[in-house]
Length: 259
Ligand SMILES: NC(=O)c1ccc[n+]([C@@H]2O[C@H](COP(=O)([O-])OP(=O)(O)OC[C@H]3O[C@@H](n4cnc5c(N)ncnc54)[C@H](OP(=O)(O)O)[C@@H]3O)[C@@H](O)[C@H]2O)c1
Image (cartoon, rainbow, N blue to C red; front, side):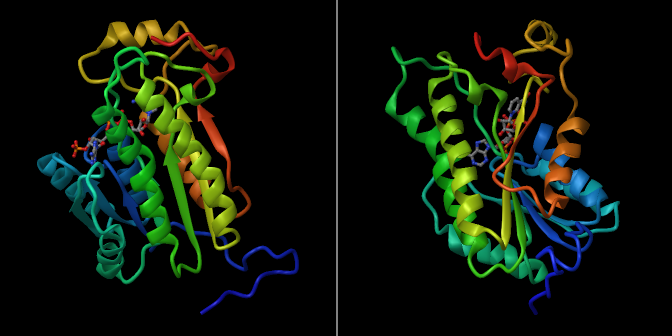
């Protein structure tokens, strides 16, 4: 049933996360895991998507349920063609609605213009741009009121020559965020978070983070909680759409160089 707006046009009831259902892609570990658990703590049922981390995802679901919500693991390879409308339809059937989509899953290969290969370029484009676009379209179809948050990277404002495919695909996701915000207003808000250094990429450790800190005006790296808080803030807002929130200690103000 459609809600009657107030005289300002604002919805009669603010968007509460309690009782809503959220899909978080790449929710098994790291930032995605923190987002799935933060949503659960806020009262949302969570579909925790994974590609290969089945065991970790089961643990996230168990932890999420400790907050008194329902949680379910869903597997899909976002780099492969698939009927994403059917995938979203299955997600919706679980609790009878799907209200929140968080496009978090990601890869982070190194490549440059001089050595990139087509397969990796296309994989990045699929994981960070094409599949999110298809998920967004399927999610939005017929939905009366919903929320989308895309995970970008502080580097979208600079030019990261050393992660060419990643960089171009995240830039595409940035444009997609704005296009979808316009396309689906006023029913659905579409925003993004651009994290700075939060966790080192696979194969890197404390030294990497220490180096990264040197490029952050606030002189530290970020926490999982700071990302989760920012995502929840955007999800709850009824008057923010098409926005990118840089949760990066000011890193975007410097732009490059990146390494
Ligand atoms: N970490 C940071 O400091 C940082 C900084 C800037 C931006 N970000 C952004 O924040 C988000 C989360 O970062 P993160 O470091 O936590 O991510 P991550 O650990 O690199 O990746 C998250 C998950 O993405 C999933 N994934 C990768 N390829 C997939 C595919 N083809 N199909 C389905 N799932 C796939 C993986 O799932 P499985 O494990 O199940 O295979 C992985 O656990 C990303 O969008 C990233 O670009 C992070």
